[in-house]
Each structure stands twice: as structure tokens, then as C-alpha cells.
Image 1 (cartoon, rainbow, N blue to C red):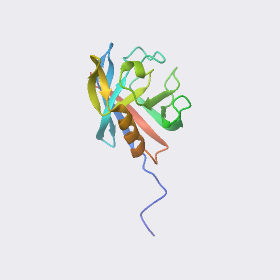
Image 2: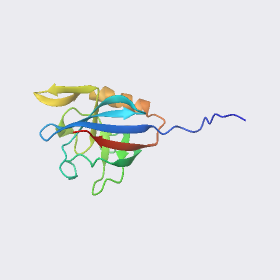
Image 3: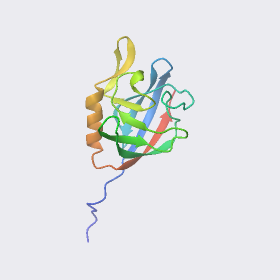
Image 4: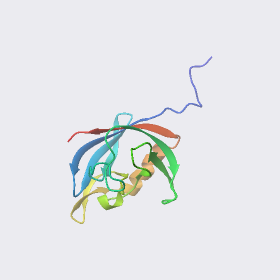
Length: 145
């Protein structure tokens, strides 16, 4: 008898630590996978969970692998956000790219004088590569501001 289970994929622990919120530039945080910082995040400001323009409430969610018809690639979708649908993880540099979703980038930077994310496209690809065998994960969002 063996102690290994080759068909079982470990479900990663994914967390967003929101570190700074500023209404004109968005909400900035760090995404951790299994307790290690993976990348920077950008979400809209907290506008009381208003669809397409607000960050989602800080709490716990389930995220599932999802083929986005809008973007044409696989990503992860955040489920069961009250009053909201289609909240995705995707690349983008500025708050105007969020549309109520979570943007991933290598680090925070400035773009045209505004706070932004750098190297977002490559960071998103790296995120999906790390999560290649993951069908769903548990997401916890913490606020530290």
C-alpha cells in the first residue's frame, strides 16, 4: 500500500491582502498562493459592491476555472458575490481595466502619472501556469488599511 495519491490535486490556499485603497486609483493588494506572495493586485475602490465599478466585499469565496467568452481564454471566476456576476481574474494595468474584477501584475508602478500594475500580461500567464491543474480554489480577501 502506498501513501501517495497521484490523482488528487491539492487545492491551493489563495488570499488577497488589500494593502491600500484610494478612490481615484483603485484598491491595491498582494495575492498569495499557499502563504507565499505571488503578485500584486488591483481592484476598483470600495463602492459598496456596486456591479462593474466596485471591489468585492472582503470575505471568503470559491473561485472556479472558467472559459471567458469575452476574453477568449481560461481564467478563474469568483462565485457567490451578493448582487454580482462575472467577476474574473485577468490582466490589465489601470483601474479602468478592472470592470469590477481583480487584475494581476508583477508589481505596482505608474502609468501616465497614475498608479498602475506592471507586467500584467506575463503575470497573468504565470498565474494560470501555476494553477494549471486547479479546477477551483478557496479565496480569502483581507483588508489592512
